[in-house]
Image (cartoon, rainbow, N blue to C red; front, side, top):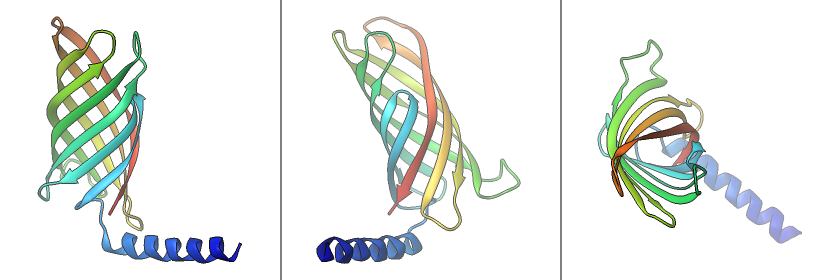
Length: 150
């Protein structure tokens, strides 16, 4: 029991120190996305207004599939009066692996909320997809999520 208490205290101190050093508008973050698809999400800032975003998730659509996506995002911090919000948009690719692999080009439109006291961001996004393999057509997805930055 002493071991558990000691290590829990060390973990808590580490998280507090990391939260003071990290900012959701810089660095790297990892979290989750709930929607279509649902799974893990990561974000890495490449400048003060651009970031790379990736996801590894499960698509619950017809014939559930393992889903992977990667996007390049641009953030507009002037779109809202409060600077804790940003509007973002971007483009990327997605691959869904199932009995028949599916690949497509994604468009992304979303809103970020950056917490002041914690290295967290929350987001909501809508994602139209133009499927290119095995045939062409339109689908879509989106969801809500939360990421911890370090």
